[in-house]
Amino acid sequence: MPEKPFYAEGLRFSCTRCSSCCRYEEGFVFLSRKDADLLAAELCLGYTEFVEIYCRWVPCLEGGMERLSLKEKRNRDCVFWTVSGCGVYKARPLQCRTFPFWRPVLVSAESWKWTAETCPGMDKGALYSMDYIEACLASQEAEPAVIKKI
Image 1 (cartoon, rainbow, N blue to C red):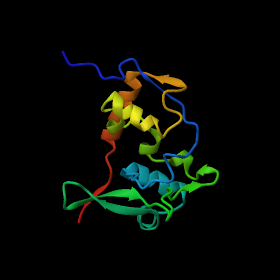
Image 2 (cartoon, helix red, strand yellow):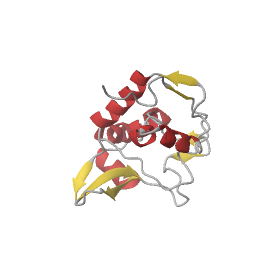
Image 3 (tube, rainbow, N blue to C red):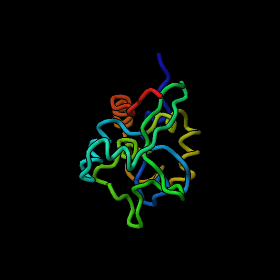
Image 4 (cartoon, rainbow, N blue to C red):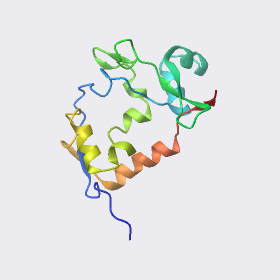
């Protein structure tokens, strides 16, 4: 019988809107086609124009392929972060909507605790069930990042 994940009893999280996941550090916000289409519509742009203005292509580990990601500002903030917070909150990408319920964060209790050191909303607030957490993971797998050959 498979071992239950450390989050079998659920995990607590409440976004404090501190923006630490959107600012200060280099990172990637990978976009599915659905994400890109929603953001383009929010900004009244076509898909191609949105990608040219707001995105970059990031090499995949496998080689020969690149994944679509949002650009960052020179100071490493998300391209959509403003002094008021997320400038596209209603249309924010799935990766942002499902934080902190990402596979690398949920691989172990240690990785959850390590991530919680930089996120004041983790281990506080609403209790999210294992079913909810696994639905977040499934949605991420169902909407993979746009990939292109180099």
